[in-house]
Length: 495
Image (cartoon, rainbow, N blue to C red; front, side, top):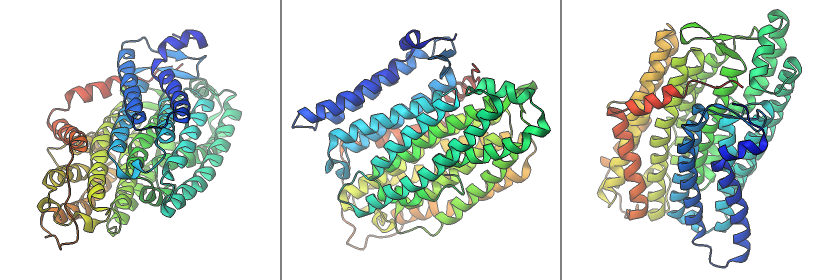
């Protein structure tokens, strides 16, 4: 199925709804005085968009808008994750004291605009759509990161994000121009065919340079080493719901784009679920080094983080980007399935950790490790237990969802006999236990000193916390349906 513009509209309800909602929120924000209900409107829009994506799961795979966008289960899976990230972020924002002090009409519109860009990142089928959607997400993210207008720290975070992002974006578009020059086409499928038919020896060097430059932009969005420098400062300076959105939604969309680009443009399906490289460049070796260095750096840097918990989670997120990159290295459907599954697991446990930090910050104004001291004994027993679940899941301990996610990744690596990479991953998981367990110890074993304050658990944030905690536990013992969905989503449609 390959549809032109007007015929594609009937399959584009979720993205069209988001686009109209963005414009509508900006207009309504200009004409109404009481803006409290605009957040509820944004939440309803995202909920309806999620329903729209679910209905598309039965549609025939194909391309939309003259091949610019793909309609397949892979893209819909990641659109669901992006929309769920947006839904949770809006829910968190409605219960955040930071966001209440902002001009909320603009905030909701920009948040939905960023969600729209991420939805297109998950379904992009050519270099132009990939670049435009990624850049659109970046521009809206710069604004969201600095949305605490009276915070100097937020302004600094936004500026650093902009500078790093501009450099990474310039490098990426230059690398993409090389790929276009070599293949003579923007579409991923045509690029694959052109590189497969090209002289491998002649194409290897320019293609390698192009991929390194392109990885600068993609690595920036997933905060992989050495393109990670923006993440700690931006997470620390941004409002907590925004930091959570960047950590989960933006990273999920970037991984979706990377998977589609590398597995449809830079490789082709082979025998037995394996993928064969095209163009004469062993890019999976480059990603092997990137994976090992990224997870190691992220965990070692997180060990000494105590001043700000969001900063600690930024380094933790860098490490988890390294874990997820292992799925690229093996060049098999098993690796692809493991990455797809891991993104959903990461959504639950990482978003839950940010939510607990926000709940503590709402009550005490503190975001440091000391703000969690004796949390279980000063009114925060429920958030403390939930945070322990998320921390142990991020470590990869059974019987939690993080263990299953890492098991799939390590199993895919071991199956291809890459024992050293698996050993590095396991060693890093052990290292991560030190700083994750330190948070749990602080909440349960350290007694309050008297200045931390009482933590109140309101029903609004409590509902979301309960859902994320239950999801993290349930997927650790009953992961079959999600694994089946991830398995179906490995069948990437090549237009």
